[in-house]
Amino acid sequence: METNNAEKTRYSDEELEEFKELILDRLAQARKDLELLQENVKGDENNSDDTAPTFKILEEGAAVLSKEENSALAVRQAKYIKNLENALIRIENKTYGICRVTGKLIPKERLYAVPHATLSIEAKMNQNKKK
Image (cartoon, rainbow, N blue to C red; front, side, top):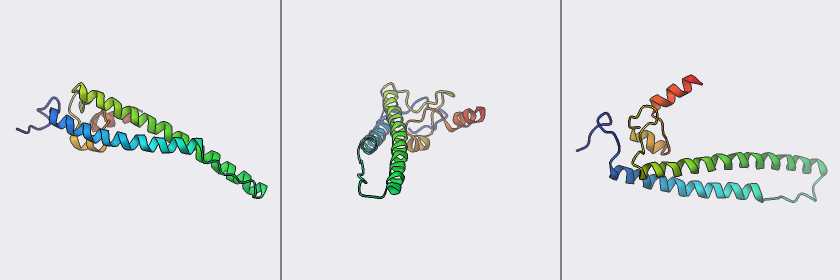
């Protein structure tokens, strides 16, 4: 009873459940990663009192850069988590996997790779051309 994407208007409840499991797995990992990033930003103050002043300045510069990078990564990770949470809402509403521009189903392969996708490749390519 499998129909192709051209005929389907939405994914079946079974398919949505499969995507939900995938998203929940990715969400759990993303939350762990965010926690590690946040710990890295907050802590890990290396004490370099016993090193030469020049080395101390270099170390502090590297630590600041590292903290800035970790902070940026943490912001990006938080956004990724929010996008995954929004995908779960779309699953509950049975609108998951439908391109918000074309209204067509986003291919499963794309959703497995980017489970929070809201655009088909076609719509994404057109969006990138406009930028």
